[in-house]
Amino acid sequence: MTQTTLDETDQHVAESDAASEQLAERSCPECNGRVGPDEDRGEVTCRDCGLVVDEDAIDRGPEWRTFEGQDGAEKSRVGAPTTELMHDKGLSTNIGWQDEDAYGAALSPRKRNRMQRLRTWDERFRAKDAQERNLKQALGEISRMASVLGLSEPVRETAGVLYRRAVEEELLPGRSIEGMATAALYAAARQHGTPRRVTEFGEVSRVEQTRVERAYRYLSRELGLAIEPEDPTKYVPQFASALDVSDGAERQARELLRVAKAHNRHSGKSPAGLAAAAIYAGAKLTNQGVTQGDVSDVSDVSRVTIRDRYQELLDVYADHEG
View (cartoon, one colour):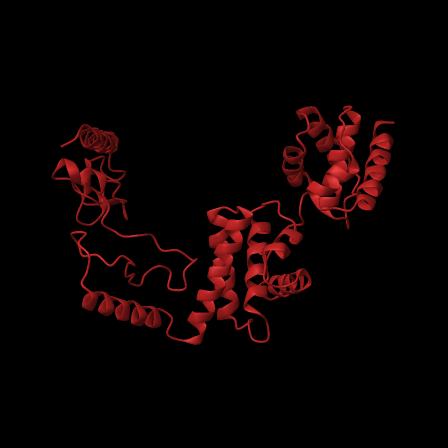
């Protein structure tokens, strides 16, 4: 048994002893008798009167057992976790692509042909109807776009859940799979507060941006998604990092947006446009050489919009300070 295995075993023993000490300090609320765990039933009961003090206890011990040192590297035997990013949630079989046996030896040509036929039939059985083929294609698109955009795993999982709901509620007929998949990913990013503009999704999607926006509005309405309006301050770190402005400029941009939101001047305006104008204003106020063109290239917001929002932010900030 390796040192790592011994340390892990000692840790679990210590945790078990601590739990036992906590139980020993407790007493029965009815008779003040001794309280102890019933491992078979997952309950904590009184040894004297039999009162169930706690139930549905969680076994926090390891699911695995280690008998030899080399087993410590692979202790899990429960398989891969389920995921919403696969049409079967990862519960089906998966035949590897390697043409090798369990000992690493190459298969004969006859066995290779047989394994290829098995892979083909396995793939057909995994997506046996139109709905599963739809899910498989859409979830693959979601994974591809999320990878390009650098979105986190929770955002991807939420997008898979939203698309499944759309399929279950029969929202797909008459609409493209790619458009609804992009809309589900955009909605998931909005729900998780991830600052991404719809133009970014339009660039990585296989459909036009207008179709993505239309699909998003339809999906949000039909599924009743409670998505709060985007906060322009969430775009500030992204733009500030891309422009390499100072912390002082970023703080000034946040202050400008805070004042604008306090006076409700952000209502009806593009959050990305406000954030871009705030970064430009913050850079100007801290004497940094950032032009409107630089901000426009980073934020994908037109110079006209930046110029207009810049003046509005300065006006409301001057009124506030005055």
